[in-house]
Image (cartoon, rainbow, N blue to C red; front, side, top):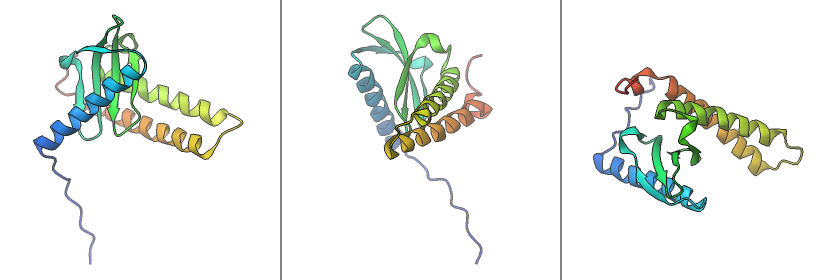
Length: 143
């Protein structure tokens, strides 16, 4: 018997909308946990890539604007000055997560939880970079 290829799982519009709401909620909570209350979402510059990740551009009550990444990866945020668009901020997070993983692994007193988190960061960093390099994902983006 030959192995059959599994067809990609179709995601309904309702599932995408629910996933997007959850990701946005996670992004807003992440900022709020840092004392930053979201004032507005700059929709046109956000990038939603269900079911993997979403990149949000959010203006905070502190007068600053942030890129926030959520989805099937650690939620993280950086000031908008780190990158000019969603694609570039994806590369930024990829590099930053590799640096964070290296710092964790360089620690003398490291436990299994930290090793697991460092490995997750590296894995997700590689995935982000692959998406960053995928021209098809960015074909409709303004240069």
